[in-house]
Length: 201
Image 1 (cartoon, rainbow, N blue to C red):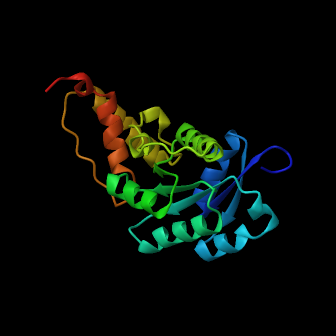
Image 2 (cartoon, one colour):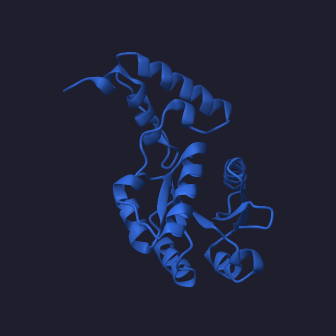
């Protein structure tokens, strides 16, 4: 923890927009964010004065690159008690298991909801201090509602408005888009807001 009482987070990500988003969301909960472009820079920063004061690490991970698991293991070897969270565009259970086996404390699915990030950071720090492990089922995120999905692009907000309208109608919905843009999250939000959620099959 830094001198002014803020908790200190290291974000491993080279994308400027994602850095700004995470730093802004974390600041809401009293966190200050340091940035590392890659694993090599992150490992070097661990030995610095600020690196020794870190409360948590957030690793942004887009693909099935095995180097992510290696990096988590190396970070864990250097700082065994430091919580490491993975941010991923893929919310599959396989990704969660892979991250946990490598030594991750928790994982979050994009698009990133502000409350979910802050809850995960606080829980990771509290769990680390108490030396407690939570079951994997508690780490897999619940479905998002439309009001929790973060994004400011006009096209994105328009698409969410259409999705919210479709959720109230009794129609089938087809969601198309590139990998990693959040199709599964939008589908879950549609289902969560639809009458079909309470229907018994």
